[in-house]
Amino acid sequence: MQEWEEVDDNLIDMDAYKSISSGDFRQYIKVDTTKTYYMYDVKYANCYDSFDANRGIANVDEHGKVTFKDKTVKILVVISIGKNPYFGLTKRS
Image 1 (cartoon, rainbow, N blue to C red):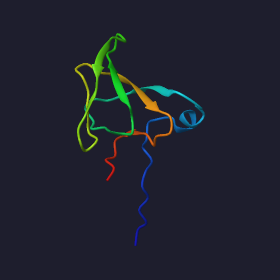
Image 2: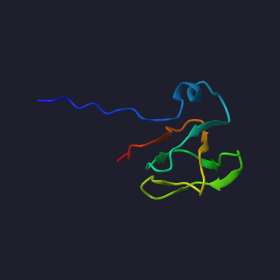
Image 3: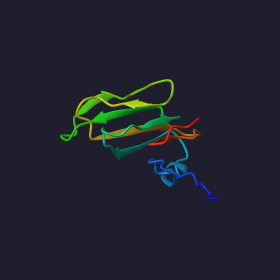
Image 4: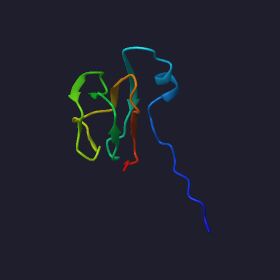
């Protein structure tokens, strides 16, 4: 019998997030738009292209699946303090 272990693939720096005492937490994350990402408890995520131009806010469906704007290479996630944020490759139930 094999033991299965859930991999923590949350790309948000939770140690930095926990150190914030008030306001919003912001973090840039590089993304590979050929992969499917999921996002939960994040206020919003701005998409940026390779020239650091803001491409607009990423869309998130009712299942947490993220749709990036064209030419996105990184995002800026904005999280309200007190949430349990997640951005990564695993869909949560």
